[in-house]
Image (cartoon, rainbow, N blue to C red; front, side):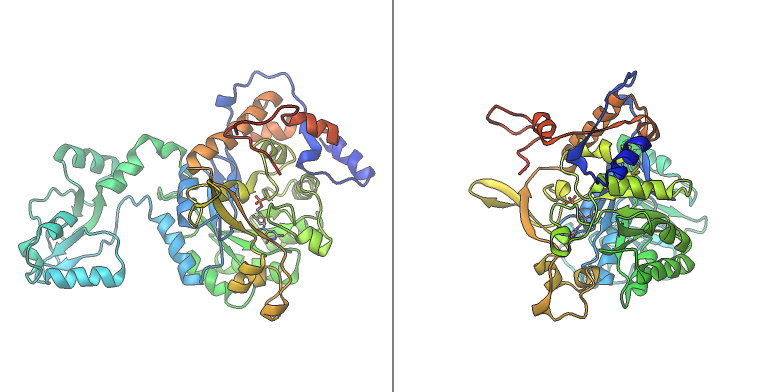
Length: 498
Ligand code: XMP
């Protein structure tokens, strides 16, 4: 692979996905058995090497939850005010809520109506609360059923709560809790100390989700909670944003700017690493190898590569800068060799076949925007135009995103520019509605597996060692796509490109 890129370098040629294909090789690999696990950053593993873009039409909590359930990672966008972005992180972290260590409780003499009022004011989405005596001992549990069946709300909760409880001690494991709840047909299992003080609470739906078989595919942290990343900037108030995200237990902070080889980014990396030493920090985007030692020197745990390859990006044509993505990824990976710092290839992936190419060029993961924007889990509604189901996508540097959000203006270094004088570096558009993320990922990961099978690679590392690149011509590219027929139906992994 090095020899190929060195020859291209000698010709001063930079290449992107459509310019290359991987050679096939002897293979004893069955695609279904290849190991596609990888890493996003030093301490953040991936079971599938797919990360969703920090875009406001791609990744909020719902996308991050579903993607982490499938083994990947979502990066929550930063066009939220910090408190709301932290709430999105919390939603992901609490989706698989094993043991609730400090449940919300009420006292047995509080009125039903006042509990319902507090529930509404605080925005609790659940109705199950342990009820305590004034001396702190567990007296009962009130559930949605109890509230629904209560005819009169001006009575103390003790008159409607359930007192026929099954309990276990504080050490009860999630597996035992599941077994007990199934056996006793209980939706909740309070844990109590020997003196009957409350020690925690298991809720069946959460416990069942965790204990059910899919768990092995999930990308979870050491507490069994889904992993999630969040984007931050480098401007005023961004360290405070990072603090809120860290308080919400975010797994990785992603410094998300259009040009990361800059003084502000290097300073931000140093600040974050000294303040939040336990949280990984990824910085991007860059596309030149000279940026790599500077970022690694500042202490990053991961690097994101891609300046202008994205589906909605106009940076390259507006500003005249950038490097085609495969060469950019290869050069940056080469500069990071020996450091243990993974590189994520961000933007420009249009078919599943681009994923094995990005990984073969040395990336440890790919970040997807437009390929995920059309799923049911991306923010926004499905819209219908001439009978076609579509979803909106917009660049974070599009005019509308920059007008609406300080985060977008800061990403493109235009915080000091009046709204009338903004220079967008992205556009807005629509993509076909593609249905559930899980189904879409079957195709993307399936394409990666197929590619690895053809190359004879059992895992991502072997793909990087064994792959050999071939440059193709536009005739070769034309031949690669269906040709000389009229497409009458779209395959789940192939549609007309442009
Ligand atoms: P894809 O091709 O997967 O790319 O849709 C997603 C990536 O594009 C970047 N991005 C932008 N780049 N102007 C840009 O130059 C923009 O307005 C813009 N919005 C997103 C971003 O890195 C994302 O992950």
